[in-house]
Image (cartoon, rainbow, N blue to C red; front, side, top):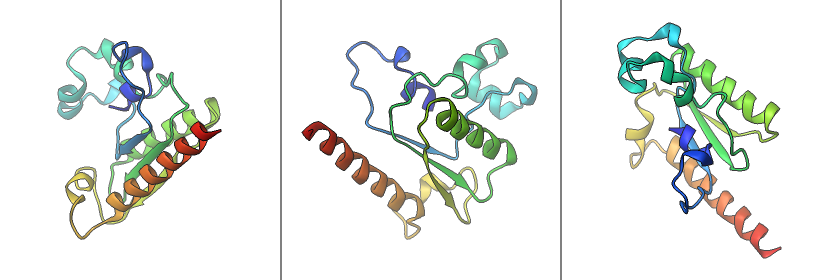
Amino acid sequence: MATYALRSDVLAPGTPAPAGVVLISGTDGTDTTSANDGRLAYFGEDLSGWPRASTLGNVLRANLPVLMSVSEFDNPGTVRSMVELANELTVEHGRMPRFVQLVGHNHYSPNPSIGTQDTQLSAEILRFVRTTAASRLQMSAR
């Protein structure tokens, strides 16, 4: 979950900071009004713990580059939470994430597409890693 990458307080002391964050069709919010079976299985039966598991409202480390993907056929709740997280990163933390829309994909299909002829996601991740690594090298050389 992005919550762990964007919150340094949940990492064990001495854990290296991530160089960047890739969020693929993520459901970044934990709206307890839509506690269906899938969300209960993902976030747990105790709805009072959901806000702590949410990425939204819990970004404490905003100095990381972020790549967000949304799939053409993601459900509206997933898209809405991704837009809300992008807004939080941009407006509250001054760090606009990169975006890619995966045409022809749904919530579940992007990850299995890696390593196939469909390079929409894998090419974007490789570009993100290359530019993030190059940027870090330039900054460390200063």
